Image (cartoon, rainbow, N blue to C red):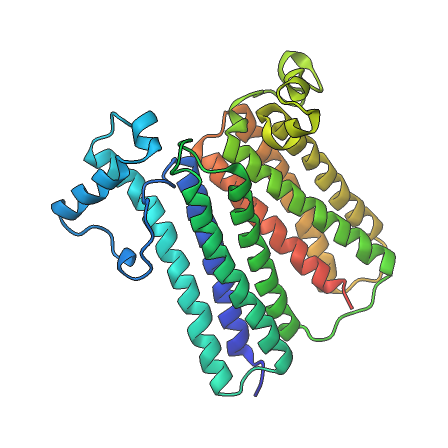
Amino acid sequence: MKDNNRVIYWLLTGCILIFIMVIVGGITRLTHSGLSISNYKLISGTLPPLNDIQWQEAFDLYKKYPEYQKINKDFDLQDFKDIYFWEWLHRVIGRLLGVVFLVPFLYFLLKKQLSSSTIKKCIILLILGGFQGFLGWYMVISGLVNRPDVSHYRLAMHLIMAFITFSFALWVALDIKYPQKKDISKRLRNIIRIAFVFLLLQIIWGAFVAGLDAGLIHNHWPLMNDGKFIHESVIIERTPVWKNFIEGKSGVQFIHRYLAFIVAISIIYIWFKTRNLGLTSLQKKSINLLLVLVIVQFVLGVFTLLLQVPVLLGVLHQVTAFFLLAGMTFTLHRFSK
């Protein structure tokens, strides 16, 4: 039988692995571990150094690049091993993800257990996964030249592609699980789509904040430093002014702060507008879940800022963003034709 439950389980397994990979990626970023492996070996790189000689060779390679030379000169071999672990784990999960997507896909394809529509969607998924791997390396090499940190633009591309790949994989699974959809007003569907876009923008600016370490400044809420809605550094940090909002720490944090209000208000509006509609049980649950998740995410964001981005809160903030995107994807699917 085509598009059976095993196909759904396969796609959801991929979603779980993407989720785990994003968590490990967040820890890698917050522990400043992302530049510990400065080469890329698809097969042999799966295993970490296995003896003292290999560890010393890996450490000597790390010493050739700006992060060690400009920031971590006091590192010994044990310090290097600590940061190496998270980047190695992140890459291994990426390889595992590729295998988990590709091998079952070929099996289902040969056994003719996929419909033509699902085959096309799965090919798109494989392309997205491959592109995500490329973006990971493209991000890393930006921190191996002069500046001992990755480009926040490339970090944002890498992160948002992971979220999009997850969202699309979940959508494909939902298409198989729930082939019949209830028609809802086009206006409401478009409002949910707009909220979805705002959420994606918020995730992008969250990556900008992480890439620029912009969460370490203006650690006040609801206003910025000195009780100001817009701190003067938001405007004067870069020229031309618009660059402040994509390259300046204050400007990037400003956008991320107030996009959070837009996302929260849009979800509250959706919940309010759907209270008295004749929704299905799944539609009602998806809207209620969205409301809970956006409140939790908002509170986590505030405390992450106030406490200057401790690792645990930073990871929880990213994890909840993932759940929020999953909830938004499910909701949009339930309200689509």
